[in-house]
Image (cartoon, rainbow, N blue to C red; front, side):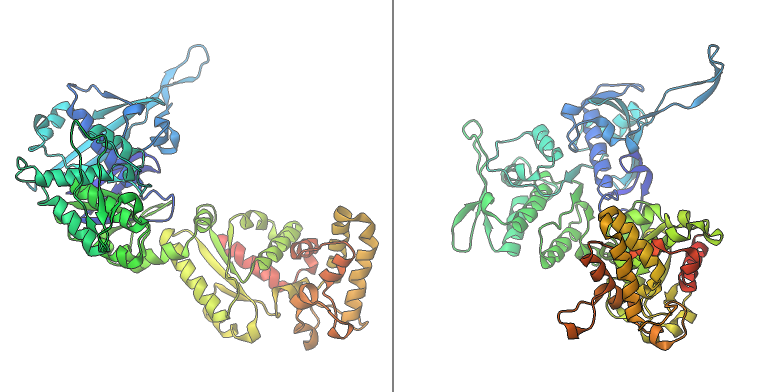
Length: 597
């Protein structure tokens, strides 16, 4: 059983250790976080062991591996295996170049290393490292890091009954089943699996399981009665009966295999549903190869949640075979212990405190969030996308304010997270769940929440939670009630969209605010009059529509649109001068700067 794996310079990992790999272990994480790289590393290690077995090298000589014969996974260039596609470096030496007077650089190859620690069948601890060196896109060299003598000692000179090395089989994600299968030898089986086509070998593996059970010369297979067990599992899970596969050497061109339905209709596997095929692939690899270690890449795909649970329960009970599984399935994660989970993130491997933390991170965090966590340090939770538009415009408007000279750089480190409405309680709960998931993935980010006033419900909460900011006015749009800024924004928009409308746009703004204030001169932002403090600026500026004369009024943006001018929230907020921006807004940006200090 494999207990520990150390991977160096392979794909997403510069160096990563996986430990405590028990009888069943899950590699979990978001897309493109590297959870399948553990499986690929072990598949490459096993491939090299099998190649070493047929070599007669001695000393420190490496064997050449050609891309055309490389079967662990599909590649069109060996450089794709190397971390950040970097296969060599050029460190500076102490020697001086007499021509340039500069220190010389020396080429140094970067080796991929896969170091595996395991217990052999006698329960004795063993370890072995495979090293890979790039040569060109079609060729690389592999060598046993401990030397050929150490390899031959562990391998018992190629005796497969005595070798200390575990037999590892990789099962890639499901592919479509082939219409027909020719009989395949070991090399061609491995090649099709490496191309990500497990559905093209399933009949061969069913036939191999049947032959292992029927062959009287094989009296002691690793798994007793493999075909009977495969047939029994398929019958229990799907209510169909696997037929005996057929192939006559020297006469048959294809291996045939199929099943009978409860109504006794005989069908080929091409008629089976995706869930049945997924389970058949897993079982055929297990019983056809009978490996010591089975590497399963997303075996939960295409399975109903109840069948996911059934499959995991089955895999857990396979005491003769270690299972290492890459998965997203919450049903898998929730049914194992925390120490059976390695959670992969772009920031490295995380050990989970409990299964709930892993499922929370997978359900709450999107790939966009991952990108934000990589590049930014502050998560700013807001109610909607329009809030972000206002805040970005104000940040631009404050660029010339000496108190906010660092704001432009700070905003590049802010990731906006939209809560998309709902009650204030729902939004706060959603923000808490999302941030908890983010903090599981990375310790770096901080957060601020900015909510509308909501009739004062959150004023008491603000005193207890420094991360919660609540607008003192009704909506964030209330801070856009600056007529002069609207005039500037409307004129600028008209200049770029329809220059002839510039005078009309400015007049529309002036008429609108005169109408709304009933002809009074009003400081909309700062007047203490409760009537103006409670005004619904979101409707007034952006939402109101009049179907009939008695319905009220059209919003300001609707009037500008009628003049041929489109003005957005960001246009208006960016057109404001620093002295026109309310202290509440400046207070929010002060909190942003403090959080990123």
